Image (cartoon, rainbow, N blue to C red; front, side):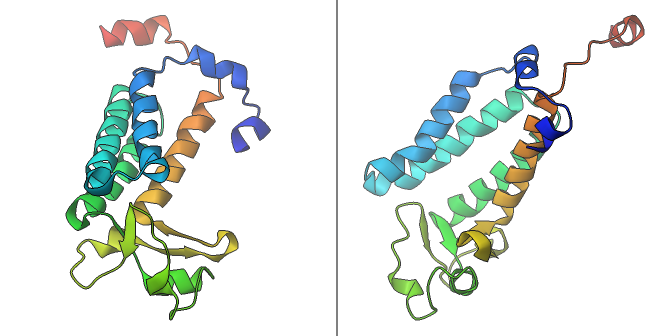
Length: 173
């Protein structure tokens, strides 16, 4: 919204070279798959594979402004999910986000990707611990960083591509 409000246009997106779009689509599809199909013991492996593909996409497009920030957010979520076999969700954050009471938090359906935070979980500072009561959501640090990075990338993609001047081209060679 900010990109368009400040003069950005969707027609400029086509001027920017986006690499490995198929890898992005595959990564997003793998992210969504556990929400559609019960993968059982393959859920976390599928989720981690999705993060790997998304990281490959960001690496292929790292030259785009904001893409490095996206990579940091992906890495934070990948790390906490990998070490805990899923994304821990803090009970206090669920209550603060007005999703459920503290008494009801253990009985919530967390799906295949998340679980209520356990004492044995590690890297919980990166887990879903940030309540967003306005949206009845609980986010992770990685989610916040990822959101800022995606917004930054989109903001810049809505701008016309800057062409290198002759002096810049000569310096690059």
